[in-house]
Image (cartoon, rainbow, N blue to C red; front, side, top):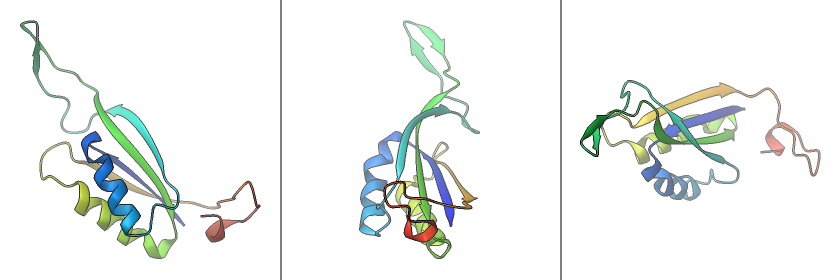
Length: 113
């Protein structure tokens, strides 16, 4: 099993939820509002005549645990859906998951996801 973490633009959240649902991967996901920066390092804006550069930008983090065979399809779906070609599109991380347990039934690993 693998955990796919995607940090994306907030305005792409509904698009990715729809795409993952259509692809059959929305059985379980966790979505969090996060702050951070990558190469973009914020953008300059003017507030009351003063130049302000926020260093932490609002992003959305999506976490999905999938079977190994589905990782490439999930990653491709995310990339195809959220890519704008501009700085700040986000990142995807794929991490190994040693074990998953559904608390309610006690199911383990692939049966738990």
